[in-house]
Image (tube, rainbow, N blue to C red; front, side, top):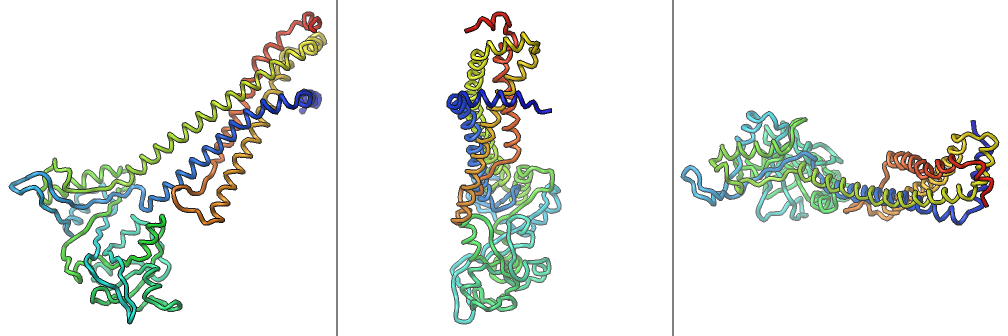
Length: 416
């Protein structure tokens, strides 16, 4: 049941000391506001950096370099080449590997042409498994499939920039042919790259053809540029990274101690490092905000001490008329919690509103990419902040409330 009299008393006390209450409540308001703002900005930074990872979060890339250690009669400085048999060996000997996607690029100076139009583009030989590693949207037609690889079909999936340059604006490229370095390929799909701006620009100028076709047509027989790998569920990327490099070292007679023969990139490791960084930023934001909140709560506690001092005679009369210590304590605690919770709620709303405004302006201006994107506040943070405020508000009023409960009615009536 709502005690109207008690709420009326709280309102009267706050109204009597409006400036003092407002200044004290501002400390709580500012603490919550800064907490929401810092966490929202931190989340925006995290989203922006995370968006830079335009590949699977547990992907591993492996490529070859020159050896640096002599081994089995072979001199250092030898360049190791990946071959098709390496892929079969990984699939058959390493059950930890879930996806293997060999990749090669067509090197040299050449142009891609169609009729009287031509330009320079990137041509990559890929497998259908590429879609497990790199995000790719097919806007028209299809992507590569197993038959394309097995039958070494001359088919191509072009980027949007390739379509703009080689085809007329209203022309459908599907089924048409383009000339890549003297060989004709039928366009079976148009892909739409995703990721950060640099990747989108590069991807828009990329043409994908079957890896087996690239090897046969452009004299790269049994050559692989690099490997893209995904672990099976439950296996860490570092396990796949180490085991694949160890197997390749064994197959290509590379010393186990030679750390330079094979290069690799562990996306999972990099992602975890980034996540650790943002966990630290979040913890720092909480620390700064909680310290500010504590300063505000101390202010609330001081106000309640003053309130108890000013109302000593009133409290004495209440106790003389039979008021229990619990009723006196609840009155002071309720007033403390109301001031704290109301100020904190306003801070929560102000911080959330500002974060929403920043996000709206970024979307409206088209600034959704880069290192800062989609700032947001986790709803759990709001619930945690409110719960924290109620607890801290009760703690702030506990000492003044206890002091009020111990007031001697006789002594209180003598108070001036």
